[in-house]
Image (cartoon, rainbow, N blue to C red; front, side, top):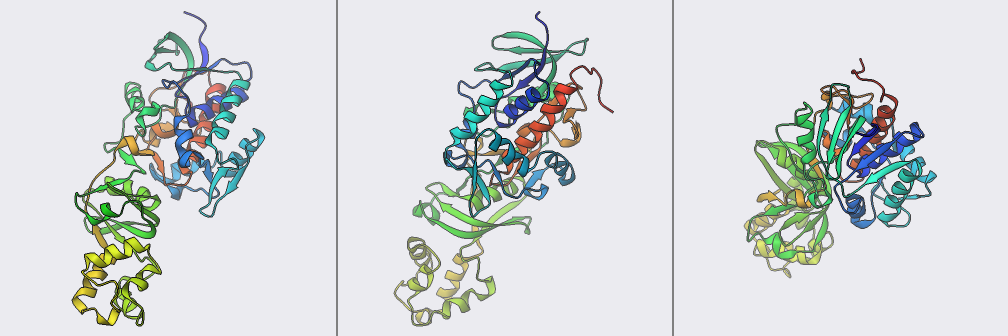
Amino acid sequence: MAEPVDCAIIGAGAAGLFAAIWAGRSSPGSRIIAFDGARKLGAKILVAGGGRCNVTHFEVSERDFNGSTPASIRRVLARFGVDETIGFFKELGVEFKREDTGKLFPVTDDAHTVLDALLAEARRVGVELRHPDRVRAIRADASSLFEIESDTGTMLARRVILATGGRALPKSGSDGFGFELARRLGHSITPLMTPALVPLRLADGHWIRSVSGIATDAEVVVRDQGRVIGRFRGSVLCTHFGLSGPAILDASRHLLHASDGSLSIRWLPDVPDDRLDAWLLDGAGSSMLTRLRRHLPERLARTLLACAEIDPSASPHQIPRDRRARLVAELGPAALPVTESRGDTFAEATAGGVPLREVRLETLESRMQPGVHLIGEVLDVDGRIGGFNFQWAWASGFVAGCAAIKLREHDRPIE
């Protein structure tokens, strides 16, 4: 068998490419190979942010993430922050613009700008990109080397970085097999694993499904066994299957991880629940439709009035109290009969994975199998919408890429 490579990276998505680049930068001349089963690299980068790639957020902290403990997440994020991300891409000629939401996008509004820069830099520092070439097995041998079995053959590696992603968007190659590789290397996987940042289906016949295409600012509330566990304010998109939009995507992982979860919505989030009836009556002189469409899209306002059997042209004081009560109930908090999520195929991330307690935070090296590092979505860390999952990819990729290449001669765990 040929001379072992210095570092084999399994998965060449955002985290894997970043790890490869920093391994190459940290040790010029080292042999670094990144494997990926996809025919075309970077599918998730290219579809992120509607094809524009929301690279990061202007402000990121451990509070923007779920999964492993905040303290552990904070230690990794601190190693490569937003300023470092901006500086790295600027060095590659990629400039960012900040939108009102705090999201950072390339000024080109084209995700290819980001992917092309990463691929060019990986090649510049000597990374060998192998795709489509899916890794089927990773085996440690008696000499502290790793046998990598892929579609094209077998090779030995001194260090391995597992960057296989989670289960979201499986057509990109992240179909969950990385979790099986982690298990074979001695790791555990969180008992509960669900899609995250995923649209939700509503029961057949629910009126929301009849107003597909409407988007409005609203507050979504998640409860578990009746107790509020999360409030999410932002755009909500009504669809032919149910609900999507940033507020729904952020709420989804909390709902799916709840033992007895329920979801409700407040269509007028700036009006306190106990003031809704008074707010309607304050619109004396205006029709009910006029009152509502000042704050809601007209088609949504008309549908809400129809659900309460209220004449849109009537003034608030002409409406019987029981009809106003029905409208107040529809305005919120109104229960949403969620039947299921749209699954991994439509999810942007995976909630669950290898717990951070099973890696050494200073290097992201496995505590179960020294010489293997785990990064990105294979770990039990998932961020809210807004570029946070990419920032986790950059930070964890940096930590492992630098550490793995420097530690490649070690054959025992770092104490």
